[in-house]
Length: 211
Ligand code: PRT
Ligand code: ZN
Image (cartoon, rainbow, N blue to C red; front, side, top):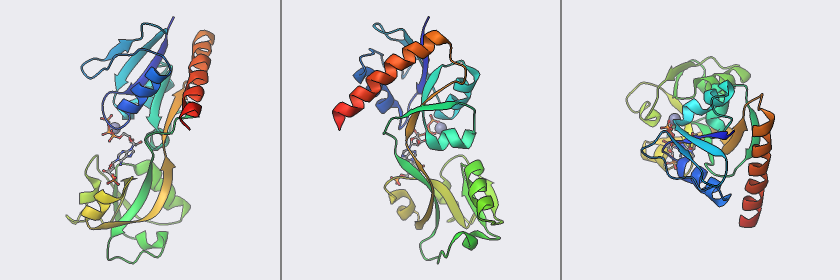
């Protein structure tokens, strides 16, 4: 009987997710060359996955819980519960336009093209604002799209803003504030729920001690 935890295999959430588990007293070894890892002192099994796959794994119950960015969670739109916001991986999903463009509001995008890796959230924003704008879905280097004539604007993750700046773009409209969250499946077995309660208790204590 184990609590199966999904975390990002490598990338911006990996180290903080591992650190949080270890700060909670779970000795989990690094998984750069492994698919899964166990803890010697707490009944957990950690699965190392691409962040995009984590909501699905948790929805399917293959993993009981997982750490993932709200941006990915809401884009994937899976039926899982958020247990706790964990405070790392902070960023925002924002619309950016050319640095010389005059952005007057969402209507600026009317009849234009926007490039993004977040078509669902972008569409939701456009719809809420009654804007008709063509979405170009691309999986990476979204900020290059305006420069090569693929789009007029982008909707991408921003933290410091330097990536946008270096590509001649400016952030004009945040549409989502995001941080990493701990998610759980809808139908967690009682034993796993008990282990999760213990883990959450420790997470809160660790985060409180840091403040
Ligand atoms: O391989 P895998 O699919 O697991 O990883 P990934 O490449 O999809 O994701 P990764 O590791 O880049 O990011 C994981 C998560 O970290 C994201 O889903 C967010 O929740 C969170 N996060 C926090 C960020 C950023 N900050 C961030 N700045 N994710 C990406 N960025 C990128 C952004 O896309 C842009 O290219 O950083 C660039 C902008 O940064 P600034 O500082 O120049 O504004
Ligand atoms: Zn990803």
